[in-house]
Image 1 (cartoon, one colour):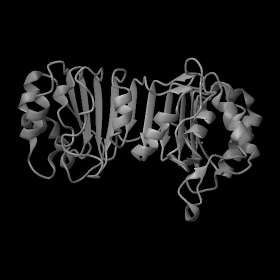
Image 2 (image 1 turned 30 degrees about the vertical axis):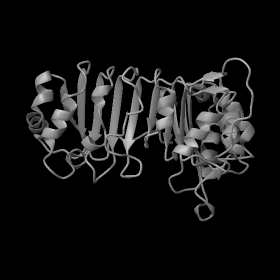
Image 3 (image 1 turned 30 degrees about the horizontal axis):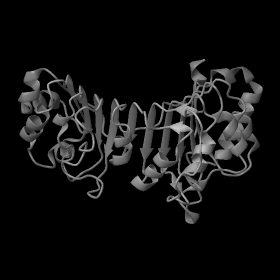
Image 4 (image 1 turned 135 degrees about the vertical axis):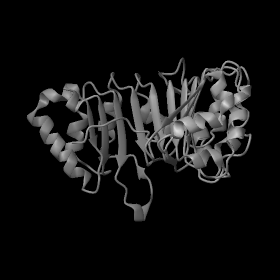
Length: 341
């Protein structure tokens, strides 16, 4: 039943309670579909909800959950983790099949509270934190956890979070290991996080924001030594003033780098000027281990692919350049595919 493998209960204007109640009623009338659900995207109000409790208790084979609280914006941009639904969330987080958790726009007392909430997710391999904040960011970890970590993450995504908040998570997490990550995704250059995973990281996805205070010319990847194991780099441009070539820095120092993918508009790459020779020469300097450079352009026209190859003769001559043309705005989504109810 692929129709029910991925369920999206995210609110699109109507009350999230209505969508949850409808789906809860469906689960009650058709209980056999419970075992087919692998992915759940859920909007909820941080209040008592019988329908949400029922849904969360009816997902024995769940592999991925994404939580989006409905926020009363005049009173703040984040929602405290629901006291009323805490037990239900704890129970679903402990599901042995669960591999991925995404938390968006939640507020916690400190990083220790976040760790406690996730501490029973023993099968968790991927965590996404989007716009998470702490009431007490400066808290240092005082908890002692004997033996090995209970959970070892392979992938971590952090979005719309200041470096000091991410550093607090890095410092506090003991029961959950985030210092042997294989994959990191972020929309800021999280220096400490990359440095802590220097020899385990294999793949990095970087969404470049239009903020000069976050990205500096030739600053990216300077923290990683040449011996880092990073071999795949995805750069997704959301900036509109500074060309990407001035933000990546010296990629040639990353000896293990084999695959580079850049998703951008033409203006992102050129900065509004014909700087393709600079793009070509800079990328051509990347170490001899580089096997592919994939350029995904989101503001395409027919015939652009051939023209851009001609503008980048150095990479094209090496036989490692490929150019794809994509619809505007594509390639930036972070959420899993979902089925609209």
